[in-house]
Length: 378
Image 1 (tube, rainbow, N blue to C red):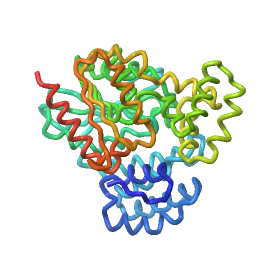
Image 2 (cartoon, helix red, strand yellow):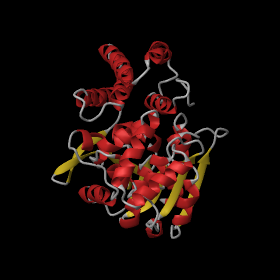
Image 3 (spheres, helix red, strand yellow):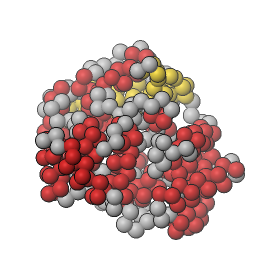
């Protein structure tokens, strides 16, 4: 279930639901939240409050809860913040201490004179198939790692990695965001010497997996969890229609000065927009609205969808706060040559209406399992 912990703040609510998935019904978490939620008034109090509770639970060796709280504490810290790297690694350390049941091997996959952190999860000892999972805009592969148990009893082992602009690839190795995700995906496939794989993209990874499948034909089946059509549409979603059109025109005209004058006042009073732009600067290495938006507009399925000739599953949340639901039909129209195209829409009535089915991940994972079971035969 998706909880509205803070009134009229969908951005914070999503992050809390996301990090507390699987543990938010516990009495300890509910008691903690009674103290934590009233203290959350700005980014500074957000960090201080979650961090202090992370330390408290870490001392008690409640590593699952410490992991969640440190994950929340680090979320809005800029990469340049002196606390960022330390808190990230406390988050990761507690994650692995909390999940000793996961049988995995860690790897450093060579990429751009450094490496991409990767994990192979050995769920099924006799598995003959591999599922590669691609992260999104602001995630660590560890967030997805806890969901791999859904693939127990299948014919899959799972490989996860932090790609450019993601997780430790960004925090530790400073590898910046790229729209051309066929390159890191191909590097992963090459490193593990795989002849064919299935691939799933999570959140912004819903674009990355389509991009990868368009150019990397060792990918046979494609899961967009959720669909993600266009980065610029996502960044401009919360602006008025007139403002969206104005910004698009300025970008088309390569008007640097007017773009950089127009955007900052519009984003400063909106928590979601502030997050998107701040995180966008960090991920891409840009430092102005114009340079960021010109980079983000490269992240689009438009013009490449016809190159995808694999089986494709598109998941969609009707009330997704990031991805415009109206983009779904645009993506469906773009995927003209897909071997097969299936769409699963989640609503308030079905559950899973939020971004990536936050609060009801199980519904998405069941749909994914069914899709892969049908299309991975033979």
